[in-house]
Image (cartoon, rainbow, N blue to C red; front, side):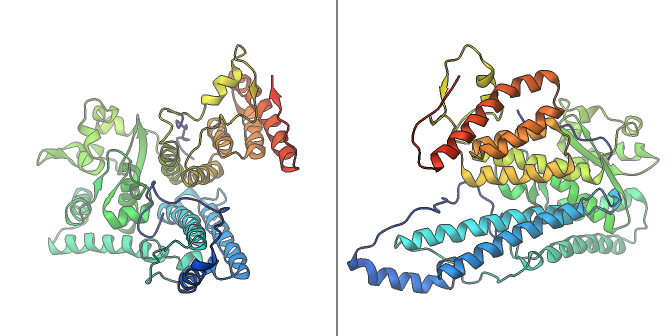
Length: 439
């Protein structure tokens, strides 16, 4: 798998972000005959209020500008939240990931409006949501029915439920008792559960996991960390093999491994991987736990973003079974292969929206890890698949400066081909039709 990023040891969608969704049809125009014109006008008049982009050219331009500003605002707020100018302890995992969701949601809302405009222009009925909430800022934007501040309040509410559970049982603040109360509220009363395989984007966004109760291991860990932080309890975590494990900061970690009711507290917090003999986590003990390198808050955000890249890339390439990001590099480096005509349609067609979402997640991760050459290589390859050849050349050239020598040699012939592809793209944009051959 291409997405194996080394994390420093210390340092979608009102209803769903479903992958089989929207057809992006920005450039399709349908010509109506006179017979259908009246029916078409009645449809468009009724739909104009639901889809502002359709109302008139000025509204369309204004709406496009609004979405562009909303995308930039969400990205800027994410960047400020994880900025290296602030201390790592001040980074809010929840805020950072809710800004990620807000940016992705803005992108998809814009796509939906553009698609609706295209369908309406063709005289095709479009279902609209009459109860859509109006919003004019990222803070007011509805994410599955709630704003960012309301989702943060949901975490506050979970913490208050834990406090109420402790009071009702007349329990003090002993570490084990607090964790047992957190486990009771999260996994029994609220029914949170881990999704073993990421097949739905709602398992990959924090607000949707809070809403559905089902999510990836890293997002459930983040919810656990955020709830305990509100209770004054510090939870730390570390990568162990393929798993990310969390536990309370304590000088007596052996308490976490005492088995009661068939499971240790450590196993209840981290799931089945701790008791799976095939997992490295199953070998952990109280003493070995102290020897693990603790992930920073920025590291944890990075893990969540890497998972998001992986999910969206899989969704984008679903129709190209076995396609890897680095596959074109091997072909470009093979000197025995025959020359390729650049205008040959040999770049696989991927789902454009999922590919763009993967690129957006990669851009955010590069803010955290600007010198990660493998990440920058994969980012450049995604730009190539998106046919943004100029940007791909730029990213892969930067990557070559950081990459090991053998990796740079593998990239060099591919980057040279991309230079020519970029030139031909510019050549064709001027109206020329002659093709170029890469040798």
